[in-house]
Length: 442
Image 1 (cartoon, rainbow, N blue to C red):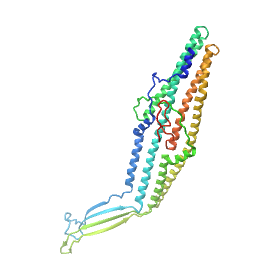
Image 2: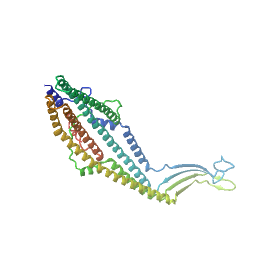
Image 3: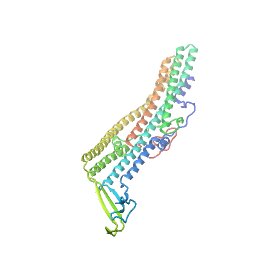
Image 4: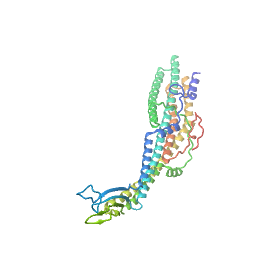
């Protein structure tokens, strides 16, 4: 009867939290929404983008016109006489306006617009990175939680093994060494439990940091799940990434910015202009020397710079060409990185999926049967205690590997989604077994 109860506890025992009661499940999509809403680094990126949008609006504007007022040709011997003494004395008002060469303003605005757009996609890339980091931390928490549950289950099993060993020793059928071995195995499990609890606290701190929650906020257990199907091919993923990845779009805008900067640098070989208008108020002058009726006068002016600093302008051309070339090569490097990440992530996902299926459908049931057989054999004296412990350790490791494989699969999927730039598996397909979440379409 005792062995039957132990076998039932091994195969069918419910999984409990550290406190002995099931913990409330957290919600990963809600955590991601919280992080996207409150993360200060993301807010900083969004503010930078808005700043460059404002700069783009300013870039194509003309400089403010300059208003001028002056008193012209006053007599030094009568400095406060503003007219009527000399025909050259006049009150003058004027206005000047700087005019860039045709096309420069539009090109300056184009350069600034591409730069702002580049920062916009940089912000979107930051969102993807934040989602990836939070998802990876979440599934690390999942693996640790399941390991803690397995440790607790095995502590109960070791306690039952110890009771059997003590009862056999009491009737002279077992060795005292078996009891000591059981105690040692329990101590090893307790040591592992301490390490896992510390890992959980570290992951909790990471999740709270990414989600911008207070550092001491408790993080509930992550729910169990089934590995979602993934029918997308490598070629489809590559096409999606080239079309959707925000960082690629940012670099494309950097390339366009470099091309516009090159056209602007070519315009610098042409002069800028300054137009002016002046109006002179004069007074009638009648004396022994002259009889001037004091007609008002005006003047128009046009000035322009002489673009003689050819070396400076050639350097501007070279700078813009290098800027474009740098963005093109960065884009090529990113594409190469995307291709590697897609291939590597898919390989890891396939390996982890097959491992999880193998552990769940073959290895773990076989290990449970092996342990059951060893327990029955130990009770009748056909198997030694060390064989029984080895069976328990093997089952423990296989169960732990199952959950780690499932977690690693989802982390590889998160890296793949970050590399491609879109969600590849809907949250409905990632639904948990225990919660029975409804399917959510993208």
